[in-house]
Every structure is written in structure tokens, then in C-alpha cells.
Length: 99
Ligand SMILES: [Zn+2]
Image 1 (cartoon, protein in one colour):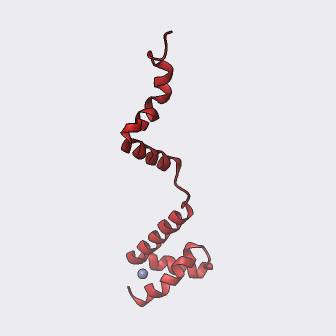
Image 2: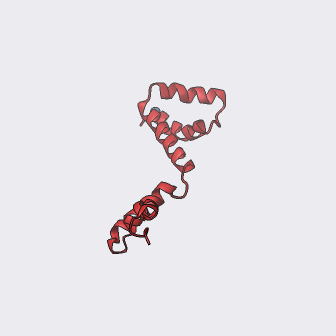
Image 3: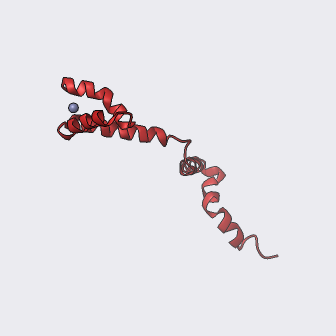
């Protein structure tokens, strides 16, 4: 990392946020063109920002997996079976049908 990179590290975040004026942005871009390190920094920054933006409460899928794991850990309650066979099994069960 050379001095230009250090100076640019500050500008990179401004560049990413599109806060630089045209001349500054062009200076950053021309440095990026021949500096892989700074391109990588910019990329990392982009990923980080994207991750922050998408940082939301656990998605439904995550909850489902958690419930599943819990259900599988409690075979005595047959929660795992209920999760999958409950709806289908109950309506189709020949045992509860009949008399
Ligand atoms: Zn650089």
C-alpha cells in the first residue's frame, strides 16, 4: 500500500457513496484502474455495505430450520413427525377414520 492508496482509502468510501466531485472521482477511478489493492478494497466495501443493508431479522427459512432442528432433537414428542406428517397424516389416517 503506497501513499496514494492511503490517501485514497479515505476517498474510496466517499467515492462509494458518490460524494466526490467529478475530478476527484476520476482521480480515484484512474488509481483503481492500475491498483488491484484498491479495487479489492472497494469491492470489500461494497460487500460490507450490502451486508449492512440486508441485515434483517432472521428470515423465515432460518426459523424453520431452527424449529426443525429442535423437533428432531425431541423424538419423544414426535414433533419432527408432526411437522411433516401432521397435516397430511391426520386427514388421511385410516386409524382415526372408521366408526
Ligand atoms: Zn491503491
